[in-house]
Structures are given as C-alpha cells and as structure tokens.
Amino acid sequence: MGVLKDALKVPVGFDTDVNGSALGEATWGITKGLENSMYITIGTGVGAGIITNGTLLHGMLHPEGGHLLLSKHPDDGYEGKCPYHKTCLEGLASGPAIEARWGKKGAELEDQKEVWELEAYYIAQALVDYIMVLSPQRIILGGGVMHQEHMMPLVREEVKRQLAGYIKTKELEDIEDYIVLPSLNDNQGIMGALKLAVNEYQLEK
Figure 1: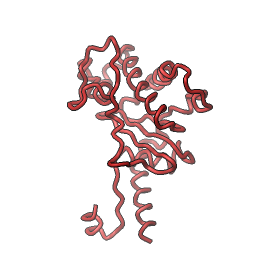
Figure 2: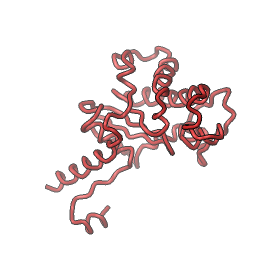
Figure 3: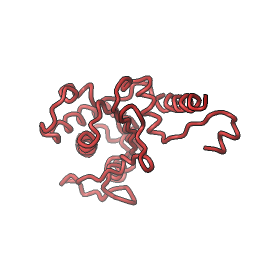
C-alpha cells in the first residue's frame, strides 16, 4: 500500500473485495444505518465481509468466512472442492464445487431442483452459524450462484428449518427483509472502494 501511495501521491485505502462490497452496501445500500451486517459472495469462491459495531471486522487478518467447516448432507457423495478443507462452505457450495459435483456449470443446471436444494442446504447451514456467532441485523447474499432466481426462497426456508425456532427476533420473523440480495446493481464493490478512499483521506486531513 505504501508503494501505491508514494507513486500516486494520494491517500490509499486497502481491503478485501468482499469487505469493499460490505462497506459499499453499509454506506449507500441495503444495510445503511445498521451497526451489524454481513455481505457474503458465493461464486468462483466464497467470501464474507462483516461489519460489527459499525466497523469492518479484521482481527488478526480478515475473516475467511468461505472456509467455515460444514457437515455434509447425508446424500452428498462429493468430497469437496477446497484443496485445504474439502468440506468448507467454499468447497461444497461455490460455483466450481457445483460444476465438479454435477459435471455442468450452474447456468446449465437451473431446472434441476436437487442441485439448488443441496446448495441451499449448505448456504443455510453456514448462515445459521454466522447468525449464532455474529448476530447480524441483515445478511446480503451476492455472487454468481445467487443469480439463480429460485435460490433465495430456498435459502430462507432452509435457514428457518435449521434454526429450528431457537432464535426469535423481529428480523427473523421478516426473513425476506433479513436475508437479501445486493441493492447497488453490482456496483457495491466499487462504491466500497470509494468509501475506503474517503476514509483514508479523512484520516490524513
């Protein structure tokens, strides 16, 4: 980052792509005004940007929410795509995992109900874990896999099933407004990058 700053002679902000998307939505989009939210992208890989108490969560590095370890569905014989963990969220539910399991890209499988029910099972399992640990006020699901229009209702229903009534909040009672799609026309990453730049500029004033 110092090299870029020296070369460009302007303040430079730096973060992960999914953190940028989370920040863009929290600044101008569907999570604006919320202190605690998540942006999860499910596509070529899986990543999670987490905002807690109004600030992007970093910790010792940054959250690797795509590598949350999952329990496999009893009918799923696929070993998992992730070379490190096999059965993490990315290993079981990313676009490449879909293609490796079924032999076709997701876009070619849109009419096969069993593909998306299994996908919803894994995504929902991860969301339940995030909900239990982070208690976000809203969760955004982005990425190419979520472009399948029938995915969101499946995920919402599976989250409710797996939560099994353990948590009762006004947010979960209105789950259509709790687990949502991005709101910034796929510009949330760019807009988050602009916000990072603004933040750095204000720090140096």
